[in-house]
Image 1: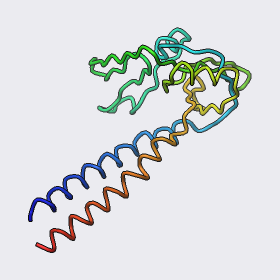
Image 2: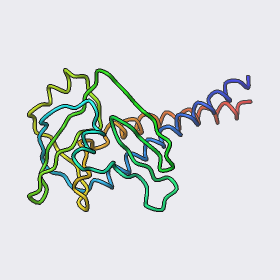
Image 3: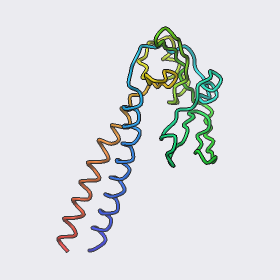
Length: 174
């Protein structure tokens, strides 16, 4: 039957593509934030983008100044492409951790981009955390090392390769 090789090819290609797409944030996080320091979670907020803007922090820029793929990431509020389109994401029962960290004697306060339930977020209050920051612009920081993205890559890429291998074997048997 020709259906099984087609299904294996399509699913294998889609899974592999999604796994490869997840490499983009892995590469971005591991190359952008080149230093670490210790910080402390001091509060919670419902809108990280608004909080960071009020602190005077610009949204994280992805892509170069002249890149056609440049966009700003404003977590917890609005993410907008450089040509002006926006997506509003609202959640009612999730919170972002607000953390403080010091680089070269200057103290910064930021809200983390990852959302948590209120009870889970409260468990982080007054805890020390590792902050990853950009040495050329310490206002750009994250609590994430990209482990979740890496895990997705490690799972999806081999599954996609296996499915494509199965598809090739099925095509050869026709």
